[in-house]
Length: 460
Image (cartoon, rainbow, N blue to C red):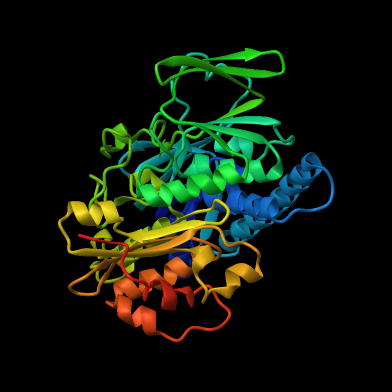
């Protein structure tokens, strides 16, 4: 490489970074994309996040031939093939742009405008006018005695690539990652136990929504240990033993594998940010303003590494903000974001947007709540057609303005339905307009006609 100075240097092949690299490359800018591993071309979502986990959800929900172990092995093999294909396509997406170069190696700042990339004995020093940090986040393994030393502890990255189906799977953490994997592996045939320090799973959700989700998971065979404070983990013959305190008593749980599903933290530890004068927050995230600029105005941080919501679609929107800084009028910012939805891909999926009932009441808003169990929604034959009437639909509505304040949809197709609700909320479509709209039939969306017409179950 004769010229090691670039218009744009991106560290990390995630959604925001690769979108920026492609956009600027197509504009004729010299771009370097640095990724530490050829197994991570395309980023977390493609390789160890959204795509492989949702592929496993699909396989778990659709029973195939063979024993549980054989079904699981086939699912893992199919998922590996899928991620390999997508990884190749993501590499080609950048590699086919003449002004973009992909460099595989570990990056660290030498100063504010210089990055050293190391791959074995090979070292490159690269300079750039603009640098974008897109290194994502990594799973947390909590400092529980014996946990990190155990041969049976897994992160989510490890579990999706595990060749064998654990007969007994213990999951530490009842958040969204823990719930998703509990649903997947229970359907494959594992005996799953979720241990969480809190009184129930998914503490951000309303009590009634979490209760329905818990019932669905229990129906799939998942067991729960609420209020569990894990004190020790030790390897035993053919597995691992977990000791925990709950209800004033000491308990033990034996498992073949244990998943640490206790969150993810920004991957900033070895980037040399101090040498670049790039500040981080107490949690290790790169500190950014509403335009995603760091303490160095030519350095940006996009995606999970900046401490925002850890969603691929947020990383994509981050790329739009930085693109506007580099090529537009620079007005777009994170402050423009309204009503960001999310989905937990248990079976069926739980999707939510806006305020929970609890949050709306705490804010003193004039609230009415309408909800129905999916099994009781006569005008939603789609659920009966596909054979899954589990779940509920819940809307939190401002009883004065008729504004939709939030929705929790635990149902078939909720990952699609929530986008319609979100778009309506962003554009001021009222609950009555959603209720009276014409939807295709038979579809899940037409449930809105019935649910939003139901008498309020609560008002505040």
